[in-house]
Length: 99
Image (cartoon, rainbow, N blue to C red; front, side):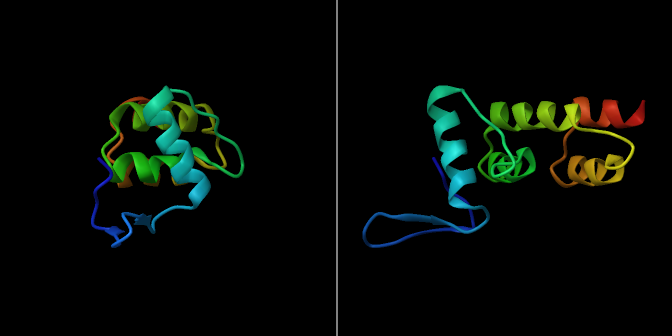
């Protein structure tokens, strides 16, 4: 399930994920089982989006995208546009930033 070029599996069956903090990975795994998420300062939506995109967890990616859309303002619109390009977000972020 969690396979990506930035993971490695040790002899002890431990999967190491290098692209995000343990808190972000924990939220992504919990979401995979419960479909519930709590995004905070310690677990920002763009951090979880990194995991969702890398492991192709589409519904989690959509959830993060919606959360990021609610945070768009004139101070961060360029940052959000870069995020939408990086993760190929085609839904609400692109629409929100163009209005």
